[in-house]
Length: 285
Figure 1 (tube, helix red, strand yellow):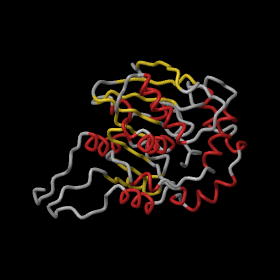
Figure 2 (tube, rainbow, N blue to C red; figure 1 turned 120 degrees about the horizontal axis):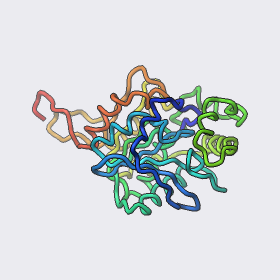
Figure 3 (cartoon, one colour; figure 1 turned 90 degrees about the horizontal axis):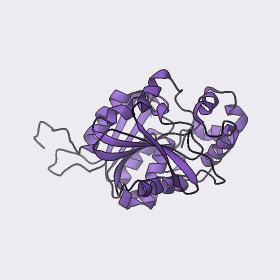
């Protein structure tokens, strides 16, 4: 969801891809660009809309200190070419599954932000055998969970709104097709208008999920709590029973685009989740 806003490309974010193994691999009729950094258990990173790998910033090199990070660029984004196909969450999920097959990655942890979070959720739904643990940052499972202000804005979206913006400038720095930005915008706007109601499918997800959102994100807090409850979260601890495998983290004073710009804070909640570390209470449980 919420794909019309993305962090600007900066010199700091460009550092994220230094010393990476960079390749393309044919998947579903396109050449998907990916970068591999670090060593350890595989962790697939899925950026947000309009974003490339550098736009994900410092969180990638931080995660690469303890994981083998495989970061990708989606259809029509950055160094991955566009094809004659709509951009949908199921399509993106199938692309990730295809990439994993091509790289002989049987199963991995998944970290998706915004558009990437939706793709990650769909990957857990459509290809559950490929998902070990899922981190969903600034994502949701139902269009009804969008902030009212954003829901009211969606019908007004036009490609012209994005032309001449910093996102178009950033797009042209890496894009395979330097003139392909308008077509990408049209596809992402169409995605905003697609129905989304995955509640029953989310409830059936078996992989542990870490839900991350800003307290001023484009998805409402109520929606993220409902998401958490669908996964078995929201119970009282300190009652002798183990906590649910899924977790919820709300970042303070944080808008949608500010989520990814707090790498240290993100790491502080992502790494313990991926390592299955649970804070100890004074009750000793």
